[in-house]
Amino acid sequence: MNWQAQMWLLGKVALALLLGGIIGYEREVAEKPAGFRTHMLVAGASALLVGMTDALLAHINLETGVNLSADPIRIVESVITGISFLGAGTILRRREAGTIKGLTTAAGLLFSSAIGMVTALEQFPLAIGGALLAVFVLRGVAIIVRKSGL
Image (cartoon, rainbow, N blue to C red; front, side, top):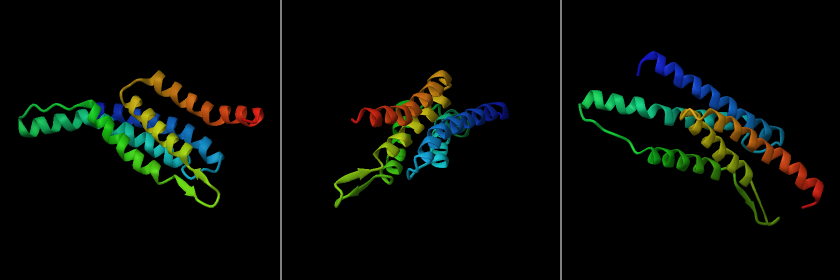
């Protein structure tokens, strides 16, 4: 992978970090277990993992002389599996209170990962719109629910 391609990937990772940070900022303000930096890193890592696939295949093909290809769905599945384990760590069940905490934060981590992946795939309007929609759901819908008494 030439340096220009690496810089382009780095720019996509930076955008993913920024968009994940928007979601994470809302979680941070709400004092949830996974906040600003965690959501940033999840989005950035997802973008980097998806973005480096082409470079990895090119490197293997060059080194071995074998023309390998990759199933993009398996890459996405692998990233989702890793993020799901991370998200599971944010979920706590309180037996005495009969409540479960952290589900929304775990979902936010998964969503941040998806934002990172679509950023790596250069689906920029989808990534930006998705991040803004996530913040609306986390903040705006919460306000509406509180005011309506639901």
